[in-house]
Amino acid sequence: MADYGVGDLAFAEVQQRLAALLPDVTVVPTPVPPLDSLSAGFVIGQLAGGDGAPERAVFHNVAPRQDDEGAREGNEGEELVAARLSSGVLIVGPRSSFVLSFVREEVAELHCVEVPESTSQFRSRDAFPLVVAELVRGGRAPLAEAVPVSSIEPVPERRVVYVDGYGNLKTSWTSAPGRAGTRVDVRVGDVLASAVVGDGTFAVPAGEVSFAPGSSSWRRGGEVVTGFELLRRGGSAAALFDGARAGDPVEVVAAR
Image 1 (spheres, rainbow, N blue to C red):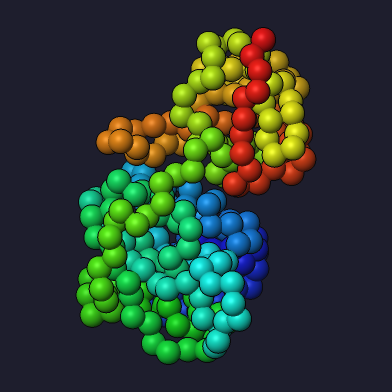
Image 2: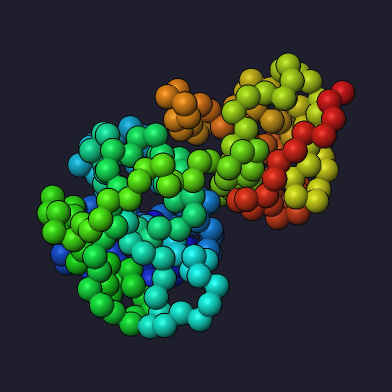
């Protein structure tokens, strides 16, 4: 999973490299928006934290290089880390903000990973795959010092965390701001719009916006919580809210 861009050649190059190192593994490329580590964390939560074979692994490269605002020598970026979930699922990728937030309570082990020296700006093709392949095979030689699981940021509250292909806004709201059927004014970023609180995302007429439990969940406080979505039936909630993206605050400012 990476932020190269939908259909970018980089996906094919990394997939080809991984296929050469792990010929028996099926590689499924998944894009997120450029430099969007919050969306990356949400996707990791769904792919690594959801149902599936414990033998699966998620390799991501979303590295906005925001850990140091100074000039970067040799194309350095965020350090590589490996997380092993209690289910056995492996996650490997740069230690960017929020990338492990949605699986925070499922992380059993977290380590820095030693990566061969490289000045390539394309680290996910030229430096990471050899290490990823060894970890996928069960090797532990690349693992360096342990990192406290408590250092993983919690899921940011009341934010857009992902925008799907229909323009639905998946948020980190996990409880309703009112009874089903209540009309509320919702502000996302700088845009205010009316929405209807619901218990199903399509329980509004065409053109209306619903604010209801969606199809995605994660763990918080030992419980599975479901994120609420803003959905514009027959249209795009993201467009209505002026191109909303992950990280934008979602505020209910009035109920009617």
